[in-house]
Structure formats: C-alpha cells, structure tokens
Image 1 (cartoon, one colour):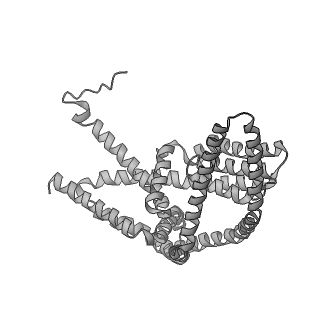
Image 2 (tube, rainbow, N blue to C red):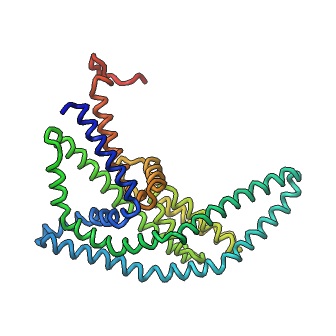
Image 3 (tube, helix red, strand yellow):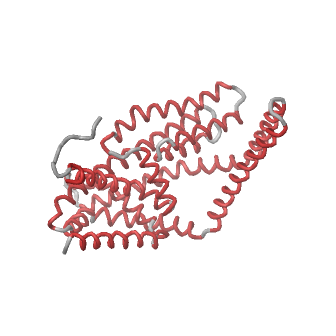
Length: 360
C-alpha cells in the first residue's frame, strides 16, 4: 500500500467516525459519560489490583463507591438547590421591579445630561438588547420543555451510565491491549508514543481541572452563603463548575452575584464583600490551584480550551462539551508532533539542512 493509499484509508476512516458521531449524537451521552468515569477511575483500579484485588472486585468497589458518593451529594445538595430555585422564582418579579425603578431613576438623571435624541437612541438600544435576551431565554426554555429527548437522555444517563462505566473499567486493560494489537506494525512505536502523550495531557488537564472546579464550587457556594447573599449557594456552585471553561465561571459568577447583591443589600461594603470573594477565588486558582493541580505540562492553552468547548457544544450539545477536551488534547498532541516532523524535514530546513532559525 502506497503512502497516498494509506492517507486515503485513514482519511476515510476518520470521515466515517465523524459521520457516526453526528448521526448518533442524540444517544451518545450515557456512553461518553461512562467512558469518562472509567477513564478517571482506571488509575485507582490499577492501584487496587497491585494491592491484591482482582480486576472485577476492584471495579465493583470503585463503581459502587463512586455512584454512592454522587447519590449522597445529590441528596444533600439537590434539596437546597431546589429550595433556592423556588425562592428565586418567587422573588424574581420583585427583582425585576427593583431593576425597573433603578432604570427609571437613571433615566431621570440622563435627561439632564443627554439630548432627547441621544436619550431615545439609548432607550432603543437597551430595549432591543433586552428584548433579544428575553426571546433567546424563551426559546431555550421552550426547547427544553417541549423536548421529550431531554427526559429520555436523563433516564438513559441514570440507568445506562453505571453499566457502561462498570464494563469499560473492568475491561479497560484488555481493550487498550486489543487496540494496540490493531496498530500498523511499521508505525506502532510512534503511535504508542503519541497515545501516551495524549494520555498524559488529557489526564493532567481533565483530572486537575475537575478538582479545581469542585474546590471553587465549594468555596464560592460557602463564601456567598456566609456573606448573606440569597441564592449564594446555587450561584457559587454554578460559577465554580463553569470554571471548567477558563474565566467564564468567575466572570459570570461575579456579575450575577454582584447584581443580586445590589438588589438585596443597601450597604456598599456588603456588595464589595461579594466581589472580593470572587477576586480571592480567582487569585487562589491562578496562583496556587491551577499550577499545582493542572500545571503547564498539559500544553493546552486557555484560548484553545475555550474554543474547543464552545465549538463542541455548538456541534454536539452537552456531549460535545464532554468530548471537547479529549479532542483538543488529541489535536494539540498531533499538531505538536506534525510541527516537530516539519521542522526536521527539508520543507523547513531546506536542502542544505541548516539549523539556523529565523532571523531575530
């Protein structure tokens, strides 16, 4: 088989794989979630095997323990979150009324500063933006409520994911050995090296970033609650978990929490305390948590991760968000490998093979 034929073969294989993902994206969620859980728990299963447990027993202990912890957390947190959501729904009209009064006050002040034409343009711009936001929220809510697929996905996630996680975790070593046996023999060593690099990148980022998000969710939730902010628990947890996308969680959380604080508190210092919680959380994350738990060794730039998550969500929804970081890790490793090959080739060095880099 010539090089061109090999390229066509692997391009066709990749195309079929992407087509299958597109066609089956509505049923992928429990399988992707189960695979992610198995990947996270595999090092612990290997450790238990070294302690003398069989693979099946280690898998059973880890899978049951993992889902028991999830259930206990849900039993503790879900009632609180539901209570806060119900309270928020009750108080939302009052918040809108307070916001309307604030806008009316600012409009009265602007009348003394702006001309009637400028004031009309500002009013039209704000009204257009508000109307667009309201229509977007209404469409999103109606799509969720009208879609029976959402309920089916949730049920499949609860029922199928534990089964998929158990079997994948139990057979993880055998599956990887079988895939290794399928590698083309002439390039098996190079492919294994890239797969190990992908695994190091993915494990370093995903496991480390997940730990950072959980720590921030706890810190923001408890901090806002202790500061007296109503709905602080749900806002803080959402901000912490959303920190998987760099800067999105902290920026969205500080705007939402400060907005709620302005509506709830009359004292400026209490609003500043709310903002300070996010400033402290961002400082601890950037200077301690991320360097210690994630580190620079993963080689995934924050902008690349943000783009991957947004693109994955736009293409495949929540499944795309789950697959975004693995795909970004794979593309990043392969791009670095391709760049290394390019810089060692005559395309970069020229026929003279000079090692001199570009002029400064």
